[in-house]
Image 1 (cartoon, helix red, strand yellow):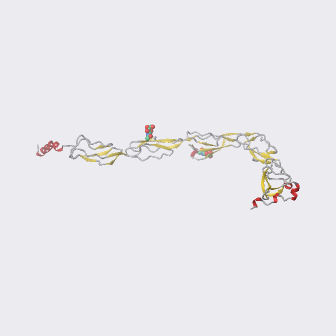
Image 2 (cartoon, protein in one colour):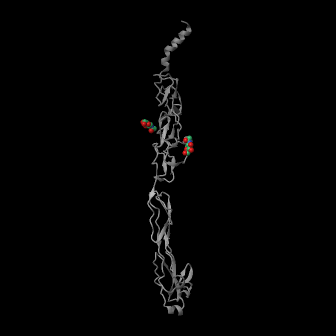
Image 3 (cartoon, helix red, strand yellow):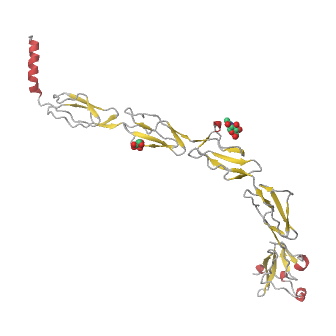
Length: 350
Ligand SMILES: *[C@@H]1O[C@H](CO)[C@@H](O)[C@H](O)[C@H]1NC(C)=O
Ligand SMILES: *[C@@H]1O[C@H](CO)[C@@H](O)[C@H](O)[C@H]1NC(C)=O
């Protein structure tokens, strides 16, 4: 044996005595591993903690040395999971998540009327990236709507190839003279079907009804169908109340049946009244009365202040009642006394 080897051998024998006390197993740090893990460490031996894949060191030192005391110092290192960025937003859909960090998953779902295209789930990987790329929510497609009985389909939104998708609207119109029964607008629904599609139907109306004291103008024909119109009129001096025109509606009924209203005789022999803002004498100008809905204003006397005021009377279908304050005068009084209509108007007093 050479002297050198002898010294090494002696050193190896004595070492355990000099090295005591030694450190035991280092404490476990959640989500971390130690580079050299064994049952016993010599004084001065260094260990390095390493966060596991998917975790990052947040605080504390990673390196520790076994001290003379043989007791590891308190290990302050903490490893926390790596966070992935929020993968959204998912347009027309929803991303279900509770925790966006490694190794958690998110789930993808679409709103009603949209189909998921792509993965249903994705997990946050150790490198901080999502395992799958964001899916898409594609709108449900509706089949082409039936067209045969319709003259026009007005697409509210044009798409390449005339594809109709969820929430698209179509407006229908029927070939004249067919009547559109139902809702003229249909929607592409979430389940890929159309909402109620209207119907085109031939609609007939009965002969329009005659009206009392009036007449109907219409072309002589065998039947009346949807959109045909007739017009009404009244014999003189009746006045039409209601619309002149009546139309055959989708319901098979006429839109209107007006009425002829009678004019009124003025039930006094002599009086000055206001008619169309003019003072006129009933006996001279209103012998034929007034028409339905017209109004005349009678003059009444305020005896206390010796002045005049007016009160209205309207003709309602042949009936006109003078106001209570009106007093008809005798022929004599009408000739020799001042006409009430010529007294000072009460609103001009004081
Ligand atoms: C994702 O969906 C699965 C299966 O339905 C469920 O077990 C899990 O809790 C969901 N995850 C989230 C974050 O909602
Ligand atoms: C789309 O619809 C319009 C109007 O209905 C029609 O004129 C056109 O030919 C259609 N195009 C295709 C590609 O079907």
